Image (cartoon, rainbow, N blue to C red; front, side, top):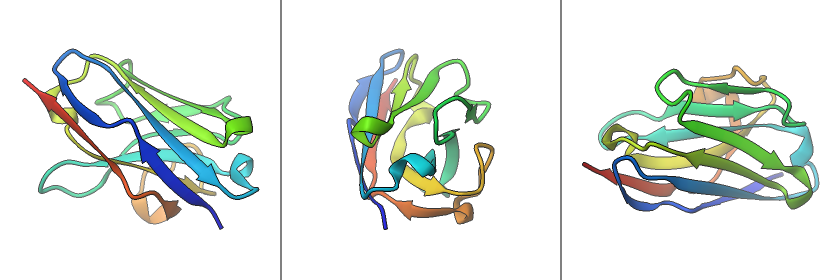
Length: 124
C-alpha cells in the first residue's frame, strides 16, 4: 500500500511559478509510474503529466507541455511538478497518483492510490 501527500500549492499571479511535491510512504514507490492530475472548479479531474518508475520517460497533456516538468527522486520517495508560466486556466486542485498502466496512462480510472490534493490558484 502507498500513501501520498501533496504540498506546494498556493496563490500565484499569471506568469509565475510553483513547485508541487508528492511524498510517498511505503517500500515500493520506485516500481510505480506516477501521475499528476488536476481538477478545475466545477470540472472533472484531468490528466496533467506522468513519469516512468526510473524517471527516464515522461508524458504531458498538450496544454502544459513546455511549461510543466515532472520529475522524481526515488531515494526520497518524492515526485515533483515544476509549473512555470502559469495561466489562470491552470487553477485547480492538483493530485498525485500511482499506476501500473504506463507513462501514457491518462485516465483517472487507471490510477490506484491518490493523495488528498493541493490547491493551486492562478490570478490574472
